[in-house]
Image (cartoon, rainbow, N blue to C red; front, side):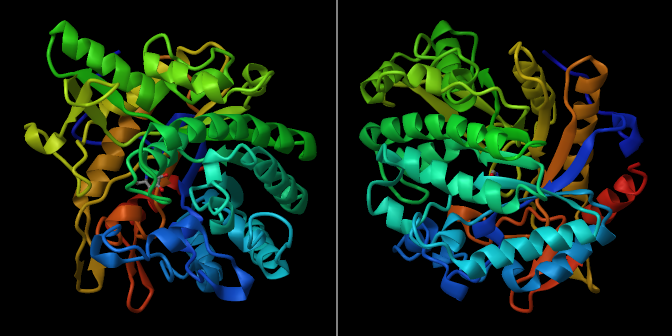
Length: 456
Ligand code: NOJ
């Protein structure tokens, strides 16, 4: 599973990836919309979590973010100017259902109708993520992802979205990176809602995996021509050494970071053979659940940024594995302290291709945070440009080597609220000057625009 290094000079065009390849850019509601309490929107767990002391870099929050709520027209026009044919964004559950269920906010419905309609008017296809981490706070007050009632809340929410927007939206993703929102939010406590430990993590995992399938089935049932998918975070994992303990540690990290959510959807069950602690998920199962975890997605989205190097550790409970920080290794890193390792995207495409029953694989996120500065009104970002080109080279190489991969979405459109890291890491292809909300297309964005210029 290794891939050649990229050529120094990137000379691919978007047409080299074939017709029917979906090019796009991805965003998420809480990171982008702002208007956190406008027009009847209810609070989400991120509205609450960001108000707690010590949770977010410089105590920042997404109350205003990029103010996409008020600026969506100008932003969508900018997408058009950048030749971006597919725009992936998420719906804020509590904008549509302020309490998570029951009362529907007509203003919330109206907002997403306007966004969808304007995308279509501009010739841009909307791709909707149903859940990108901003659970309505009212549901968290009842236990959130730990409460099995979420199966019903989520089903009703997806039914509402599919029936409201399914006449115009064909491309749907159920969950965004379930491993991250359960791991960071319900095990490590570093993301909303800030819960810690296995007792919150395990039920959250089981309920999220069930909802992943439930959401898929609802969309399939209500939107006749739907392309239904869901997205997974994934990282290439390497053992720190050839020692069997390190190799075993790397395998366990692979289960947790790459296999936990996809395998039950494919009918393979939870990968507890390779990570025995996952057997404890059984205590949350009800009769018939194994069957309910299955769903035949039309595509899966994979989201890769980096690779991890893993070594054995006695001190980490259950896993006995720990990540060797990229900053302790002699490698290039981004502002997130993530290693820049282009072959990781090739290897992840290959890894997911090895499952026999995935019809389509699309890279639904890839990108990098580097420090950006405005000089003479322009933002020159050669490191991000190099990153995107090197990763794209590997996507193309994977395709050439016969692996299926039929889309690429860059993360992200405008610099936005990067969760616990606040506004510090800028991932955008477009610079956001937050005080004025002015947008400046970075040189990477101009390159992407020109690269996409010839998409048929
Ligand atoms: C994955 C998440 O989906 C997105 O919300 C986040 O901003 C990026 N990765 C970068 O960390």
